[in-house]
Image 1 (cartoon, one colour):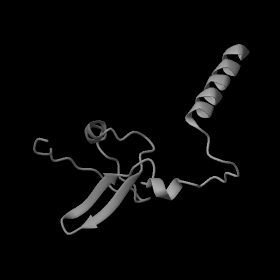
Image 2 (cartoon, rainbow, N blue to C red):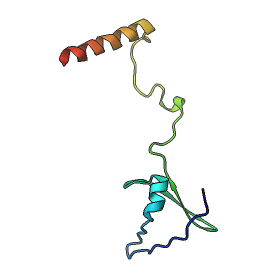
Image 3 (cartoon, rainbow, N blue to C red):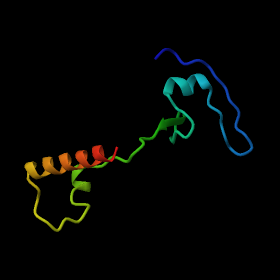
Length: 91
């Protein structure tokens, strides 16, 4: 990224700051983007937060109860095909 332009903004009475549109466009920060605010020795750093928290497979495996035996690949394929047929018949 090239040397940043010297841009200024004003803090409102509510503590709000408007980021210049050139920065919002470059960063692809649309309305509703959540930003992490970090106070550093050099100033305030803004970073976009991820849409979803990071998870590991072991955090979500077995999160839903299952009382039966595991399905075979053939059973899973048959189930997907049956659902596709059901949805197609509905149209």
